[in-house]
Length: 213
Length: 237
Image 1 (cartoon, rainbow over the protein chains, first blue to last red):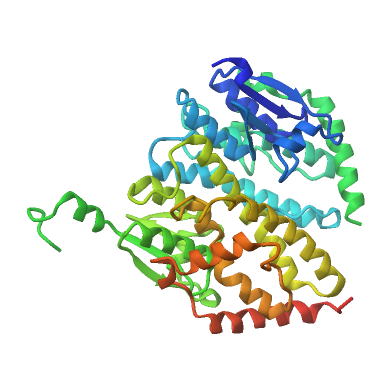
Image 2: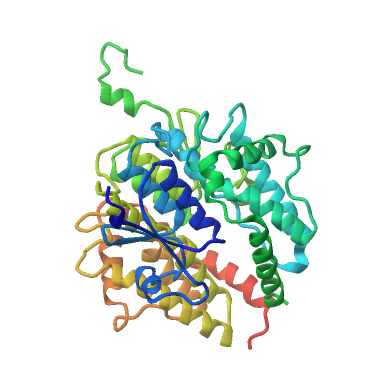
């Protein structure tokens, strides 16, 4: 497919744009990447995603699509090789359910509570890895791509708020999976520079906690 | 049970074990009821009492401990929108989603928007008072504005027939007016939301859909109790 027909609006530090980059990379889809200068959102972004005004937005044959998990399913349906979702309906349902963990509260002063909830969610996520290398089995699948950012971001959040969220003792499968996943070449290629990301997330955290007091 | 010599393939499918755990009022469980009924699928219903959940429900849904749970041949499925997609993929008659990937993606987007934004913003109107409620109304109406525009030139969100997005927004057709009545705020009127109001009529009285609405008076009582809890916590501003 011609590169001009697929365009991705993203942001270098967005984990959700990263999901889409990974999916496009996995399927070898050529695309034009447009880096948005958040918070100076381009008119194009606002036109393509008037509802949320956020990245990622995938534009295919001039049709814009927002919401990363919806975009992943779309990519999987249009480009059928290297499938993200399994074929069996029950397995597909489990995969769709995978990234939908209960949302955790973010308030700064409820740090311990948020950390506890986050760990519970991670434990639940981990149960999907029993006996498997990746959530998708031997190969990377939908849940790997949807949840992959968590390893990196959880580690950074842990550093920023001073609480360790994932460790090899309490979540051995998840810990192993993150390491494995982040070493896969095409996954690694798309990751933003870690030091830059840590600084960015620290700033973001400051803004978040200031806003909630 | 009919002997295997007499059973056709269709009947075998119907005889598969399908159980839906629901409550009488859950709008999320109602989506699953509609999907199964629209497709003419046979199933058993187990009504749960939320204050006294059955051990079976807790076994099938230890994470959320919520309804709906659909159990198909012993395998539990959670999350109403995930369940709807499963139903659509397993039983192909009366499809809920269109064939075209772009249209499917659009449908998924709006269904998600309903749950992520519309519902919480309307709930916010319901639980707030005074100035907070006024601000909440503005947000809720902005969200509803997007929904209204999706109905331009269409009878249902899915076009001529009911589909996934209609089921996802179905709660607007019965619960919205209950919430409005209990909290005293009007969110949709004929001037700003003519298409939505028309859709509500079309959907509420559609065949199959109209058979399953929970009793309105019971819903009023239930949400009045909720409202009292929320508004007694806050002083009006």
